[in-house]
Image 1 (cartoon, rainbow, N blue to C red):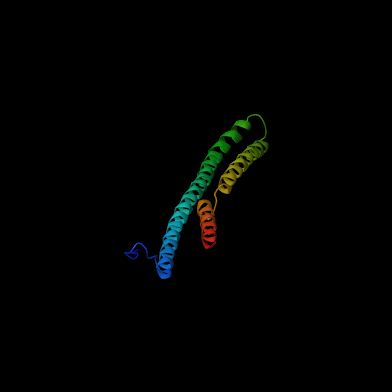
Image 2: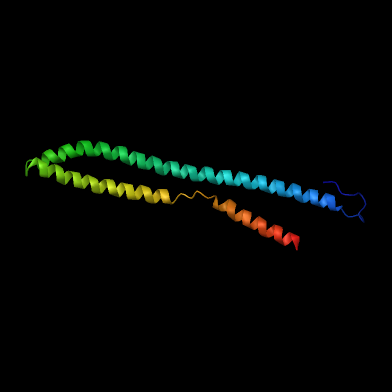
Length: 133
């Protein structure tokens, strides 16, 4: 911004308002960039948690398929195959529940709000209020 060349002259009100407008515009652009970065980071966390849940489901299914057959036939030497299948099914249900609870708790750690951006916007608002005084 160019100010008057004489040192005893002060910048006009229009120049000051224009400068404040430019600063606010720059500040809003910076806040938008920060918000995008935060949202991108949180989306990556959510993607990783979702991938873990999907991987747990696939691994659980494969293990359940082959492990169940082996366990049922192994227990079938000691008891009736129906009871053996029921026992193995209960074990897999407990494992599935544990995987679900772990995945859900990790998913709850993902914040959809850009916390840092919200805080800096509050600081900017406090700064603007103090500027008016």
